[in-house]
Image (cartoon, rainbow, N blue to C red):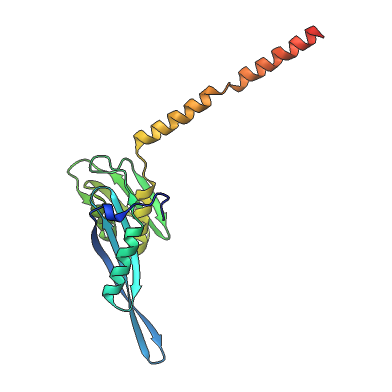
Length: 191
């Protein structure tokens, strides 16, 4: 889930939102030892979003660790006005998430952790469906994975055209074979 291009969180006005706190009890000789895990989403509402999880013996410590992790894992989401450029389905663990672009005015049709991530990223109109597990952590990670796999159509077309231009400069195989045959004929007639 880490991205190659590190985004500096100091340059962005990030808002943190707590998605889930989970109390975990470890049974030891003297009784139960309680600890807490937190899942946090952070985003600027303008295409940058990240999630993080943290564990600690106290709730505030878990939230602080999760916030720090979320700021390290920021990604850039390509937006097409107030929605996403194309539909995408992604599976993470047993959680499967479907994201589809929607018409203006639709709003965010999503549940729990998916909604929090989409709101933090600045997406206003989108249709979503959770098709697999309802585990909030895996749904959040699947959503982030889907958003990171989105591509801007204009950039993709430009990349493909440039790649096509490079291959067009090379001579086609048929022309190369014909040139080779002519060389062979010349050497046969000369010799």
